[in-house]
Image (cartoon, rainbow, N blue to C red; front, side, top):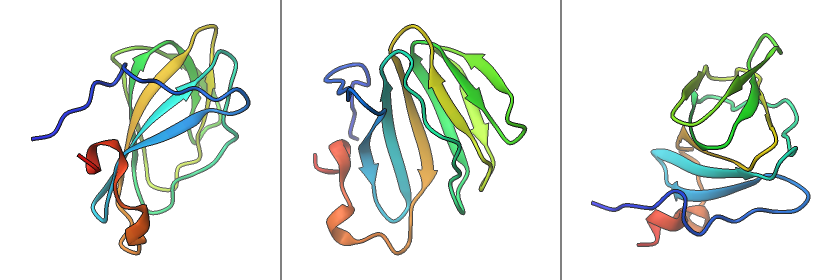
Length: 119
């Protein structure tokens, strides 16, 4: 069994949100996202994979397929369908969440790993 403390060693970038790979392989992708207050992603989608989010810290506005923003915070689970367009915006505090996606069969071997994958 492997484990990772999700609120330790957080990395934030000044200009854009940061997606830190925790585990990346042919079966799954687990990313820890960090947003400074006010940072946001543009609307985008994840092809061929559902996108599951567990919010760990802070509050943010999450928009799904309908484009309407809804406020969500710690201990909430959000489920986006494959190819569902979505966007995220941090509110007044740092926002940290973990996302779970399917792996990519054509994943290059040099991109397999992540924080947990290297242990």
